[in-house]
Image (cartoon, rainbow, N blue to C red; front, side, top):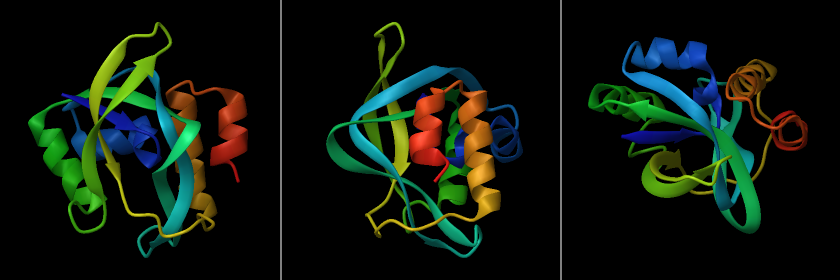
Length: 143
């Protein structure tokens, strides 16, 4: 199964802790008609956390991972599925225009807020692990 990560789960160190050997990073991909935001509040993260919201003509960059069932169960736990985050299947596109159906976690929008510096650092490191465009990182992730 494919999994689209756009927040802290792009960070390979975090994914190793959460899924051990049940995942493999494949490539960077983009999701059309969504926008990345930091929103809501996480007690664990001491600030707003990554989310995506519907937004025509916008793009969210992230990492495409191949994951097994055990990894999905662990991600469900860490993402608070189904109480905090929901999960849906979306179509993402790689740099070669290949389309993948991938699972993604998202939640109802709770407005936009500031993440903690520690959390933001994890997200930005993950974005670099996934080789996201620098202009995207500076515009959306490093706010």
